[in-house]
Length: 345
Image 1: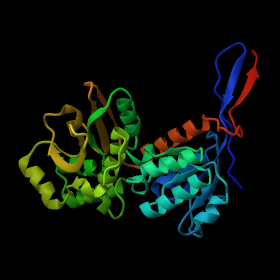
Image 2: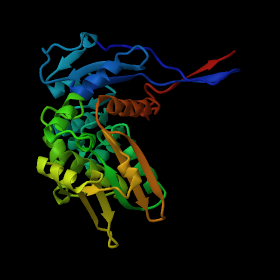
Image 3: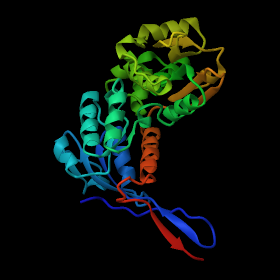
Image 4: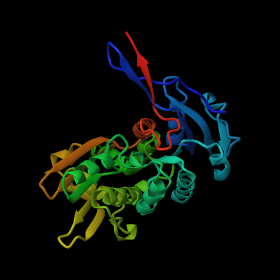
């Protein structure tokens, strides 16, 4: 049984108005870790116009927040999808499992919102094609940028002229660590502080190795240039205690910069490395768990965005922004479409 919540209405003021009632989405969550649990807890709030139907978890018997006590949980993805949700929110911790689930959901005509960058990086073209063939939505903005609307910003830039270069701070955990080092904290203490704040996982390897940024820049490369780049071709510099010590000795403001450039012949190259950005006020001002993006197009246009890039709250907010878009889009088959209610005052 779904956890039902109330409908939400939007209306104009005065006179005879058409009230737009978004269709109520049946939402299933894959993964109840930091992000998945945050999304699930918000879904069961009375003000949200959704029905939380089920969760895919490793251990259905595990004790969970009492607000999720009635939530149906499954460990088998196929049984999980038998719940027939309208949308699956993928917050799984591994890329391979996430990609299998995304493919299975899209093939069944279920829309997907994913925060799992490892699941989609390098596979966006095929996943978009699968979504189109089954007339469903496939959204992955929550996988990049957290509270910074990076995918949307790149799409806007590309819509106004061919992209030329993209530069970004993509890992909030690493940026938090660099900011803590600047304040005098040791490397180990800075990593621990990031973990305590909920920005870094108990195993911070993906952040420190640069793999997290590699996957994110791969996704943005697809958005900017319409082509996927081999992730093995993206040069990545890891953050180590020795490298952090070097930054402190040299001085200045250091950031983990992910950069993609298009060559005159149309080729695309990408890298993730640490750079001193004292002479770039936009990136130098990004402190703590912040993320930031700058896109330049061939017409000389510059498009930027920034926001918190790590932690539960910004990612969950991005997930709900995508759910709202899906709820406001009537399906082509006419079922569960937006209802228009005539009112008089």
